Image 1 (tube, chains in turn orange, green):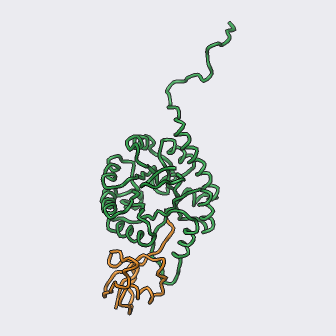
Image 2: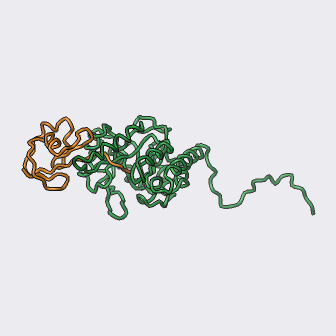
Image 3: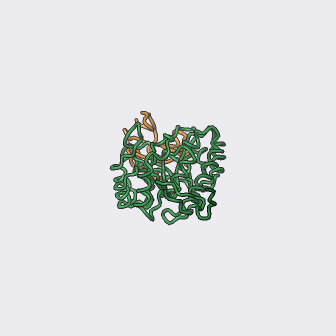
Length: 65
Length: 257
């Protein structure tokens, strides 16, 4: 199905957000995730079922002022 | 030492972690600054890069408290979601709340700021709002649940120092008892000393250290200035006077005519 991941359209096979992170080879430990503008907590990712057209944000710690 | 949200913070120097020439220089500058609180942010992670993890490891080794920010957010929705993501990732309910209202000046959108501060405070966050020196906005932020205010002294990254000292003086006087941190616009250690002399509890800065020729030496210099400014405030500086007043006693002067 087609999702928008960090602003880029992408075709993926995963059914859940946790599976998506594995599919894309993300390290789960250092991430914050959101689906359609709402936070998905780390412990909720396995239960977060994806739907075509979802907008997924995958963020990590970054330098900031 | 000052208190914010019931926690005692040893250093009055809050330091940003962006724009340093290298991770090692960042680490050395943090050490030289003596800062206990570092600001961090969240950005999109590229799959498989691990860059966020490396940065996070570096910060965790420093044994400091992190203050995640919502830098770059231009709407209440963006800022609120970013804050919630930061809480999930960094495991802290502290958030430096920025809702930017203008691309060029990076001036806070104070209306959105108050709205976001209320939503986040109600959600259990301890909000550190980046605001202007407007006293009415400060009042609204306190009503929204903030227990600290962080007025700018000049635009972010401008290095101008306090452009309106009278406003800062009035702000300090009005918000007696509220922890106040000058955030943004400081360029030199003397600027930091000046706002500490006015009675501000702390300063938060980034660019002035990170973009200095020698960030580590500049971090140390700011730390010294902050300490000096605070000590001067506690020592109760003399108020300026319009007329000269002799410092050497006149009584007992010899008469030669």
